Structures are given as C-alpha cells and as structure tokens.
Length: 162
Image (cartoon, rainbow, N blue to C red; front, side, top):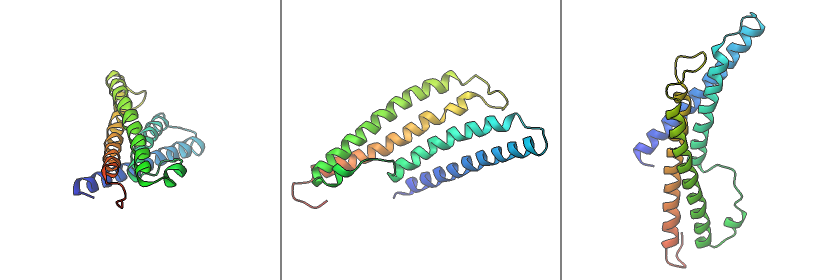
C-alpha cells in the first residue's frame, strides 16, 4: 500500500474511533445527568446524533476500503476468472455510479445548509452534511481502483493465471 494510502487509512480509522468515542461519551453524559442529577443537557443528544451520522459514513468508507460490505459472492466465486472479473467490474461500476449520485446531492445538501445553525451547538448543518460528499468521493475512488483491477484481470490473455 502506498504511503499516502496508509496515512489516509490511519486518519480514517482515527476519525472512526474519535466519532464513536465522542458519541458514546455524549450518551453517557446524557444518561448520567438525566437520571442521576435530574438535569439533562440540551446539547449532548444533538451532538451524539450528528456524531452517529459521521461515524456511519466513515464506517461506509472503511468497509469499502476493506471490501467487507455484505454481498452474495456465490456466483462470482464459482465462475471462471474472466467472468469473476466482469462481475467485479459491474459491482465497481455500480459503486462508482452510486458514489457519484451521492456526491452530487451531498454537495447540494451541504451547501444549502451551510448557513443553517444547529439547534444547540456552535456549528451549522453544513458541517453535519459535509461528510456525505466526502465519503462518496472516497468510496468512489476506492471503487475506481477496484474497477481498474477488474479491467486488468479482464485484459489478461485467456488461460493465464490471475
């Protein structure tokens, strides 16, 4: 794995840990303050919700990077190498298309909400929605790399080992 890809993977993993930990701590603070002190905070529930959104999209990128999304691979696994590569190319193409659509609409929703303040926090909804195009761009890049690998497997002469 190239140096830049390793750095990006580490940053992504650290962001996933940070968002999940932040979400967990917000929920714990909310529970403790509500049930033990009878004085809940107004911001912790909202922040936990936004961190959950970010954590979910970061998890999507990590799953795409590790190729661990749920899939039915029975046909591909039992197919000859070229057919398997063609199936992988179709899947990668569908992922690129989905990421492209999500990127386009994610940019729109993030820009439309760039000046809409959150209810209790110090940032705008544009920050909350910014993860959508960023994650779509990352997944699209990973899917393009998968498509490139599938195309190179398709271009190999018949009978050569993969």
